Length: 85
Length: 188
Image (tube, rainbow over all chains, first blue to last red):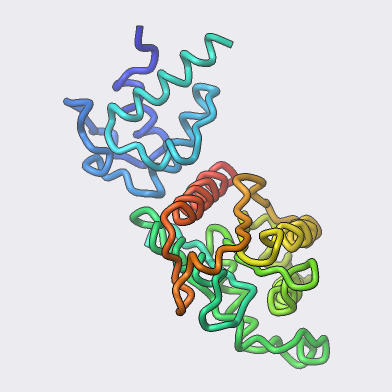
């Protein structure tokens, strides 16, 4: 069961990455760049995700997220791993 | 440019491997991130008499470049088990309080995120990097601990102009830069 959803990512993008609140995400394959997520907002997103979900995102993974789906998959992977500890 | 990283090389040599590492960092920087390499050549030796009559212009430029930067990326050779005099001198100037305000403000190094790397010597500049960490500690800089990038016996990995031509090292530099960007973002 996916615990971190596209909708939650949408919320974090709006709350923390400076993305306009009218944002809609129709397709997980949408590139983050198409949502006006640049380096600054991507890093803000990473830090916000870490705080909100208590995960630690590796730098290489953080800066190589390209799509909405990449971000959702990454956070879910980290949450699953945390469960196994 | 969204994020500015200030690159500082401890070597003045035109074909320096360490300056070459900084150029490699600039090349692999993600979109929206600029690695500006500051030329330390115009900085005079630190001299309190000079400071008293007015901090020299090149020093002011260096300090302002540090202020503007999100983080510092320092590349240093190892001379006599330590950083170069060029780098030490630059840090000595940068570490001075800000005398433009009364009382003087903190130096631009205070709480500045920083990462380091180095090429050369038989131990890959690790002893120089340990000294650099001590200096950073004194200045209350926020030093990235890992990854460590200390490269030994790598002269053949650079061309005659000091340009890096090795993909594995380029990936190490990329990893360090990415880690520095995330480190700085967490500290913001």
